[in-house]
Structures are given as C-alpha cells and as structure tokens.
Image (cartoon, rainbow, N blue to C red; front, side, top):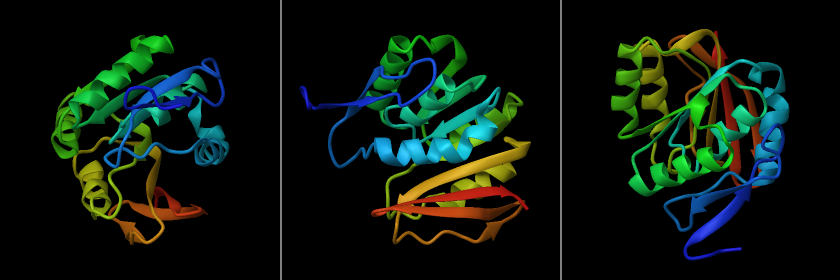
Length: 191
C-alpha cells in the first residue's frame, strides 16, 4: 500500500502486534519482509526477554521495534539517513516504545564509538546495511574493538545471498546461516 513514497510494514508479535510501521520506499531502503522477520524472531525467542538491542542501519526501526514488542528491555537505533531517523521516531511513538529507545543519526562506526564512551553494551545486534557493499566485516571488528558486546551476545547480519562474510573475527564465530530467497541471515556468537 504505497502512500506518498511510504510503504507500510507491521509488527508481527508481542505487545505492539499488528501495529503498522512506516518505511521509506525506494532502492535505498529494503525492509525485512514479514516472513524473514517472523523466522528470525522464532530463532531469537530465547534471547529477547530483557535484552539490550542495537539496531544498526535501522531503516524503519522494524527489527528493533519487533524486539521491544517481544520483551527486550531497551533498543538503540542508528541510521545515517535523516529521513529514516524521522520515520524511526514516528514508529516508536506510534508503538508507544519511545521510553525504551535511543535514536542516533550518523555513521555506524562513529555511533559505536560514542556508545562505547557511555559504557553501553548489547546482547542482540541487528546489522542490515545496504547489500553488496562489504560493510559488515568492518562493523563486526568495530563492535569488538569498541567493547559494546555483552558477555553473551548474538549478532544477526542480513545480506544478499551472494555476500561473503568472515567465518570468524576476533571473539565471534558464525553459529548459523539461514537463507530465504535472495536474503541471507548470518548469526554470530562468542567463540
């Protein structure tokens, strides 16, 4: 249902189940489909309750909001597109989750450095950068270098099926890979 350049998504489960979320339309944003999101959160179910979530390259904030809806304690959303930040803030307001969220505009590495300086650590990290840009290996290194990973963490990288990711880096190793059509989810845990 496109309306004025905006596509409508929805929260799949939890306290905000069924509420609609906005996202930017166009090649620059590629929202996670409901099918992929539902399968992703079925895998994450044991980890979500009371977790601290980081949604890097958040776009609409759909993944972080889904985690909050399902019982995450808090979520930090980042994106370098000002329009995406405005949409995340609207979606948080609409789902009544603003109190549990922090929203930051800027480049991912700079925001990770800032979060590190404030002593923030995260259990669940969503990485959904533009496909086929080779961004994830460097971001994985930044996550470790800046010390923002909690003792037990899970990182989910959403990429194109053809994107190559490192088997391991520093303290993390791939624990699972799921493929849905042309979308690949790669899960990293502490090795």
